[in-house]
Length: 260
Image (tube, rainbow, N blue to C red; front, top):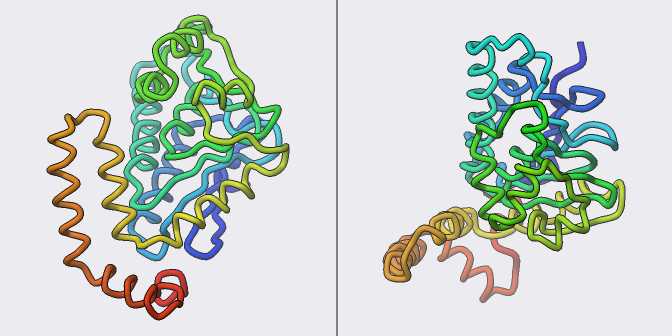
């Protein structure tokens, strides 16, 4: 049987590929497999970055398998949604950085998963959208908020209410994706970006990640208080001592030399 996902490692980066051809549709089984893999990687301190992509060169993921929803069985529908929520939360809560390498269509729940990553790199020719309303469905895993946070209400309405999809170039213009690359290069560029983060101090990345995630909901005073505590935590840690010593000795820090 073909595995529902494949896993590769490159240095401190894990590359997870959704492998449910031809469209990498999401089922309860494939989502639970992905969630379990994310949980395992979250527990592995040696993995500091994660790249998520889809098998093939046409689909990142076309979203949930609608045949599973066609019966209208609420129990099955809830199980599918809960599995999707687990994946999205796992991507968002990952201790390092997550990068979606969108190598084709990212639609519906596929786009929700990409939006749960910290960065999205999309290939020219990729199409991104949330067309669920076309079949009487809506995004239920938090994707509408993440979409609205990135592109604003007007574009969120166009993608969700009008069912429009945008190509990679337009997605970059409206802030939906961070970078557009030539066909076949999304995974390569995503890995490169992930490796840049993996070369930073792991504790510093985690602390900064928390500040960035919390910033939109905080006042300046609230953010300053949290930033001050994070700074003092960093100052009191072994990572800073090792990093500064390496800098003064004009060599790479230990986490960039695979020593930790």
